[in-house]
Image (cartoon, rainbow, N blue to C red; front, side, top):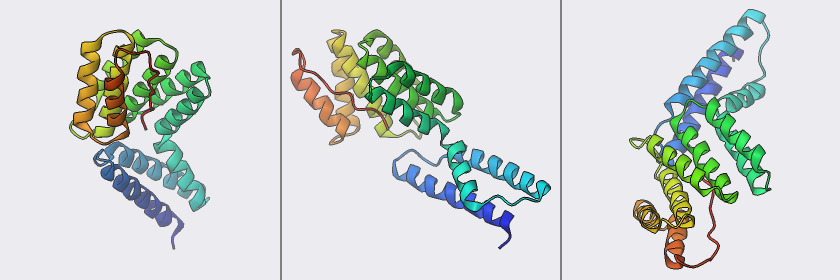
Length: 207
């Protein structure tokens, strides 16, 4: 098979596979991912043709993945660093992930997890600000209910820590309504049962 055509087919299959996963998660079709993969493929194939050097299909697939998934990879890195208590490095990774992404869902994901890091540092006022920003910026028309539930759940916990019970109850009840029987809904139900106590409430990261 023509090596240049093989790269194009690889890129198409990559977009179809990740598009199917995104659709199954309820996030809609990833238009930006498809556009970035198309631009990268055209540039790679053109450079390869001009240089008369064929790109190995496996290397090409790895490069497409790194380019298109860069923001989510940085979010995963930030979450890993946060879990290990390396908060400043986690915040740097999450900030970079948000800046490098052109996808509103990926940017919201980075903001939500930034809020989680700040909550772990007991910076609840800052967490409320960024989580509200993330909630406003969520692409509601095609966004994932899981992403909104993650944002509202952590926002509810932050409000609880600040003693703003009315706001906390509003957010936690919305989580249960939005995504019943999910990890976030169960956490919200637990938080509602324990409100007014000093019980430690977990903060699952968004993913």
